[in-house]
Amino acid sequence: MKRTETQLPRDWREGRRLRAWDLYQQGWTQRAIAAALGVSEGAVSQWLTRAVQGGREALRHRTGGGPKPRLTAAQRAQLPSLLAAGAEAYGFRGAVWTRQRVAQVIHREFGVRYHPAHVSRLLRAIGWSRQKPIQRASQRDEAAIRAWQEERFPELKKAPG
Image (cartoon, rainbow, N blue to C red; front, top):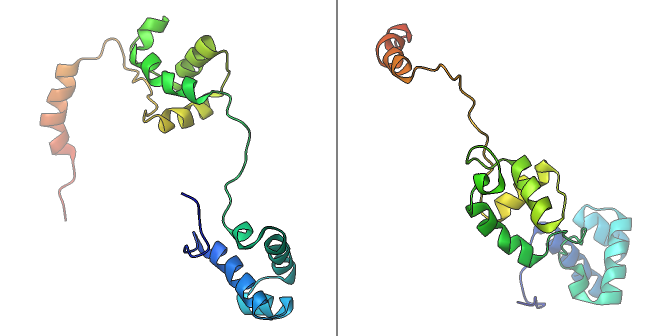
């Protein structure tokens, strides 16, 4: 959907820029606009220059360009099906996916290296959450733990007030 001049501002900053343009078109000076909006004259000058060159739409909110994604949209779409196969299908011990494991699979399948911290962003974008394996002692006695929690722990817990 393309924005039109009648649309409301996306945020208060955009509204402030559009208000500056409206005031300028009514004959206000840059100094008066800056004082009325509580901004520097330099900011008003930059806004008005953008508006003169590109019209009112040049004052609208713009998203940052940023670097081009290393994974294509098609590759990102493939990622959920690759992960659905399970970690063991890629030679990992255990069925838990970690950021490091997902990073290795992405490198193996697509030849793209990602830092594990960025992998969590990719996983969130496709609706997955990062997992961390639970490390427990091999001699752990679940029955003894459950008995302690049910019998001994309530005795140790402080009573309210």
